[in-house]
Length: 192
Image: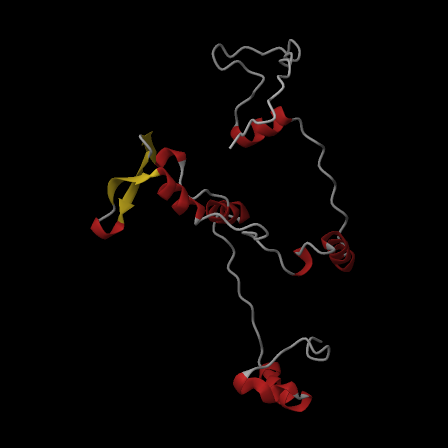
């Protein structure tokens, strides 16, 4: 398909494959091979796989627990020296050098840590998923009921925001907190 559309490009030793006949000859042995895709079931289920991947895809460059102190323009943090049997050490860097190293781990604008391909790619994802369900004769998914943020927090953390952390009694809403009066900021104010 991509070859017929002229989307494939060939360079160097593969330049002769631009012609249709050599390209078909090149692919012929691959078409005769029986391709078997093998994927093991995860031992503890898909939740374990997602938890494993999330540790790498949704973490920050350095955890707050590793930060020791910020004093006189120096940031001190804990690290493990793997060359000396995982010995824990403390390193101090100038604040600007610490920020420079931290930002080496930040992706530039427009880059994504996780990219989806195929039917999960962003372009026309809803239509592609609907087509997959149609081909599989699968019923459309039931949309989940919108949960209150308190219920969502309880599901994720196991802690109820409706229970007093001190006495264990039920917390009652008294009303919204009044907003403070807006103070006009001077036009020369610079927040950076």
